[in-house]
Image (cartoon, rainbow over all chains, first blue to last red; front, side, top):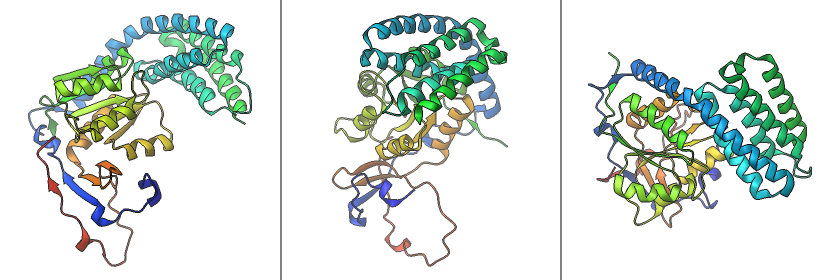
Length: 169
Length: 176
C-alpha cells in the first residue's frame, strides 16, 4: 500500500491537519466473562444457519422464477436496466449460497457477476451466456443440496467459467 | 482460560437489501449472544433507523437499492446530524477486489468482510473490534474521518525512531 492511496485527493497530510480522537471502546459494553465460549458460539451459529438453510431451497425457487421472468424480458428488450436487475438478484444469491450449503450457487453466481463486470468492453454482451448461467442455477436447484456432489453440475460450472474467461480477453 | 465474550449489551444494525441475508446475519449474531438487533434494507433507511436505534455496530451490504453501503458510511461519518459518527462499521460484500477494499477503507469503514460470510469470520470481526479499538482520525477540510487506517505496527524498520516526539495525543470522546 502506498502513501498516495491513503490520501483521497493526493495531497500530503501535514501533522497540523490531523486530529486524533479516541472513541469510547466497545470493550466497555462487551465483558469478556459471563458470555459464551467462542467454540460454543460458533456451534450455535452453525446450527442456526442449518435451520435457515432449509428455507433457502424455497427462496432459490422463488428467485429463479423471478430471474426467468427478467431473462425473458431481457431477451426481448435487451434493456440494460433489466440486466442490472438480473445482476443484483444473482449477486445477492451468490453471497448467500455457500453460507447456506449451496457452494455451486456462489460459484455460478460469481461466474455470472464476473462476466458482467469484467468482460472485455470491446466484445458485445452474449445473451446466450447470460441464459446459460440461469440454466445452470436451475440444475443446482433441481439437485438441491446434493448438487455439490454432482459431477455434471461441477462440469457445467467449469464450462461457464471457461467461457467467461474467454470473454474477458 | 479462554475469554467468554458477553455481547448481550451490544446494539447491532444489520443492513442488506436482501431480507433473507439480514435474517442470516441476525441469526448468527443471536447465536453469538447479541440481543439488540435492528434491520434496515437500504443505506438511507439505515441512517434513519440508526437515529432511533443508536447502534454500536453497523453491518452493511455494499450494493443496495435506495442508497448503498458507501452512501451509508458517508452519512454516518460525515453528516452533522449523524447520530453515531464513531460507530463501528463492518462492510459485508460480495465484491472482494483489492480496489473495493481500499475504497471501503478510505470511506472510513472499520472492518471488511467478504461474502459468502461464515460464522467464524463474522465472530472474528466482532472480537477484533472489541479487542483492537482504533483511534479515529480527522483530517482538516473533510479529507478523511474514520478509524486510523494504519493497522500494522511495523517491526522491520531498524533506523532511528523519528515519529515519537510528533505523535499526536489522542483526544478521548464520549461517544460510541
